[in-house]
Length: 336
Image (cartoon, rainbow, N blue to C red; front, side, top):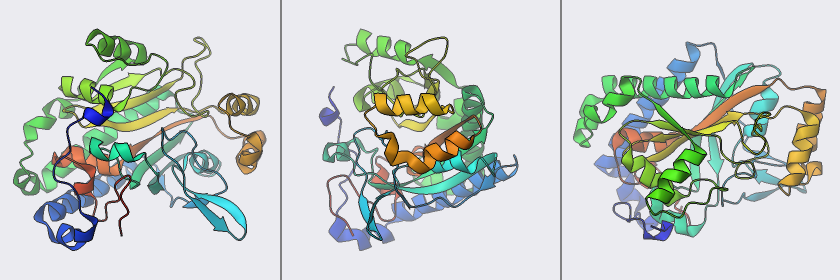
């Protein structure tokens, strides 16, 4: 099934009816769930020694690894800056003063218009961005699983009537709350998809349709690890024992909700990161401030980003991300 053939996600958002969207009972319910999800996120991290920082919104560069999405340009006193697609470089830089940190970060990604029908993409969204000095990929995966479990439990305990009003059954989270997270490698995921007739490339990220197939087959969250080099950003660390394999991961929600989290162990070696930039077609000169800090010495680290709206959609069981955003901006649609 191609991306374009995915079923339409619920009713279509009408930008000219933003007022109706803002007063809709579904929107109010989603915002109440979001409010408790954010409470749960901050409660989880503060109890574990993390510091919340406020992320930058513009910079000379931003994450070039956002799959298929483009960054928006801004004129910053005559210098071409970018709106943040991800604050990954600032997270790493901040480790010099804050060894365990998180953001609730606004991101802007101009997604391809065809992603509007996936129900899983917005141009404007927020990420729960996390970075941990000295951590391994496995540490980051444990943190992501712990965070998701804590937030789900908090929301179920604080707004059960709201979830019930949306038709979301507590049983949908039974496996997750029992701590049952599965894992497979990218190669294993590709093999499963190809065995089922889906033409997934072994050298690329799992495409949206393939990810949805795997998510629908699952009854509990699961990690996909070991993406091939070249399919993700140059900052994902390459496994020294398995050249061409990255020490990264995604966390996929069951039930067709798809990816909630992407993360990795970060590349911290100056010479290696410059080589990786060049291999991915990036000009290292654009990353001068980041490379200067890396040359001075940045801690090794691992971290991840969890999409806030994707988390709220999973919690509420709603069809599309626009339903869990007060001011949705769908790919390809000009909105206020």
